Image 1 (tube, rainbow, N blue to C red):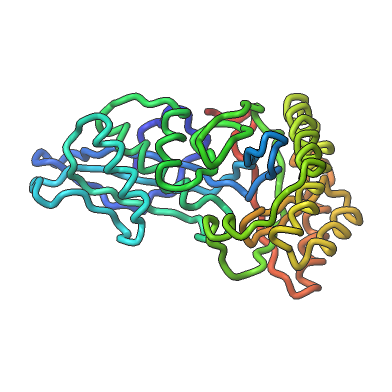
Image 2 (cartoon, rainbow, N blue to C red):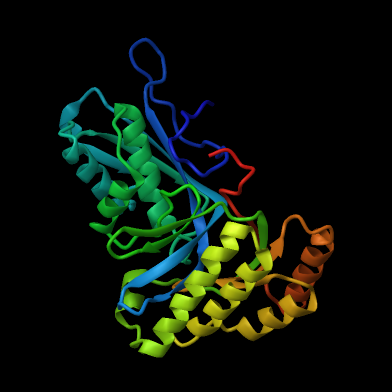
Length: 319
């Protein structure tokens, strides 16, 4: 079925599994929206001014949402599946902002595992917002939407079409880094789940020397993305993964670094407050298939289950 084009979307078509509400004439009448997720973050830490920040790593897994009105206004706002209460809260806030009726049905379909550090919750909220925006044909900037999301929870900045540096707790855009080079991530889910908000409350302090190191890494990755320097991107992500061991240890970080070095990967990347870890590969590498297969086989030999992700919002993709 047809999905309306979403402004600033950084996604490819998502296989739609939602019902098609119809009006009395039998025509479909709903707003639709999509959002991709992220594979954790390229970089996450604290700047010298004490502000938390992250640099996004958008990948091609998606949430799709629909919003439509029922004949009975008394039903109020509803969400399906019913546990998507954050998306429901965002729908209420967005409708209230534009003084629109506080009723309708929000349906969400996702292929993003939850509580794994892949921005599933932020993607739910962005897709829901885009569905409502599409239905009512209202306008809201990505920056305004980010601030709205932060009223509900810290956001992973998936409303922006490319890689960005972002203050996730207040919804402030630090910098648009631009489209990422096309990369593949050979990944593994180490298992379990992480409550991002609870995790943040337990983090130890970060001293000024480490904050200055994060500032340097941020400057490096801004230049690397601008120039499409995959190797430098990988070096920064590896350093961020190593620094993150003090806050959210990855059981297999040493193994992934070794495999990355052995098979010519770009670097190791992690979900800093999640359960995924992966090896970055250049999608334009003529030995991509050979490297990917070798890494996958090595992970299987260590009783680990490999998965593959691809970056989204690359320079040759429509946005």
